[in-house]
Amino acid sequence: MSGVRVLVGTRKGAFVLTSDGKREKWDVSGPHFAGWEIYHLKGSAVNPDRIYASQTSGWFGQIIQRSDDGGKTWHQPGLPVGAEVAPDPSKSWSNKFAYDTSAETGKPLTTHQFYDGTQHPWEFKRVWHMEPSLRDAETVYAGIEDAALFRSTDGGQNWKELAGLRGHGTGPQWQPGAGGMCLHTVILDPSNPQRMFIAISAAGAFRTDDGGATWKPINKGLYSQYIPDPRAEVGHCVHHVAMNPARPGVLFMQKHWDVMRSDDAGDSWREVSGNLPTDFGFVIDVHAHEPETIYVVPIKSDSEHYVHEGKLRVYRSRTGGNEWEALTKGLPQKDCYVNVLRDAMAVDSLDQCGVYFGTTGGQVYASADAGDTWNAIVRDLPGVLSVEVQTL
Amino acid sequence: MTNSIRVVLPYHLRTLAGVGAEIEIAVEGRVTQRAVLDALEARYPMLRGTIREHGTLQRRAFLRFFASEEDLSHESPDAELPEAVASGKEPFVVLGAIAGG
Image (cartoon, rainbow over all chains, first blue to last red; front, side, top):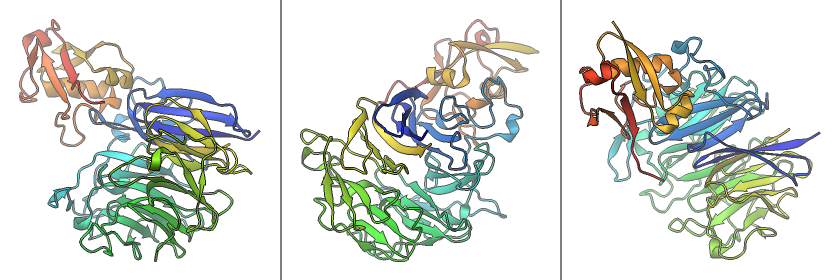
């Protein structure tokens, strides 16, 4: 029996929403990690019972949590459920993200721009995004703030930086977005295990073709009017990037203004905002079976982070951009002033593609018909930070 | 000499460690902030990095250490804690800032 499991990270805990293939009736589990910010949860494509979560707090720092039973129970990797003491605590540092400055594999700890334009040292704040490997349930990537990429090959027990990215050389030109200098997007190419795409706010998008050892900026064609050189190689505020696994060379980007498209794995980009009422926003995603069908949720402006005209509208293009239609059936069309954050939209891969998104107002909406109609799964969660979905 | 030290943790760390309002930690030798926290983290490794930063072992900014109603946060981590703590009469309190949304 097919079904879906929606993983929701919020400002005060994580929630797991499950339904069968009809996606009409939902079970709601949570809050897990009650009271903590859960920036992101994501399940392994290899073992759907394996889910990783980023639990974070300004008071207590970063905790990595893992479930091996589909989100029913959780533990910190290396600390088995029910164990009072780790089998060997010296071998498990699941919450430690130390920039690699070693001579063998690391890069020097340099500086990046800060909000006031001065140079600021790299400092770890939190894990923004977890991306399980497509081939191995024990391997998972973590995108962190201050921007860097880490990888674990032991199920999250230990983390090592892929320092080639932070040590790219353009680091001093990277700068934080309003939410921090975060590596928020990690996309693994299913056709090429050596290729990955990442995006940083606000440095831009980068690609590796050697498994993370070296990286190149892929921002040609982006135009950002608020930086000294609007067409600079780095420094762009990329909000999110999406890709359909069947078309790994085609990428879609929601930027700080502008919706963009690349047909050459990021080597060049063109704007496809078209007839959107506003092309500011955070989320972007691609239909599971229609690689030219994409979704965004426009936000009024960079100064007013809520939906345009008090109406919650998802916009869909069936032509890969430029021609957009508003999807409103089942969504509030008055007095609505929520935002949808960059990692808070996802699609399932059931025959009729389901689309899901969560809002800063605590609603999680689902469409079982690719966006034609919407229903709220839940309405009163804490502000939603992220949404992922597993097709079971 | 082994001392049994009472420790009070903030709510979220109790949940993380799966412990109650007050716990007892065995500390060998001199009873200092460092010794108590080392013993606490050895006993409850899931708390590593939550009270003291990884690597530097500096106290995390939004936490304070108290004992006998005195703020010990700015004392040397290697200074001996008050005798009341070492004797078990008073707990060593890890307190989180009351702030934020």
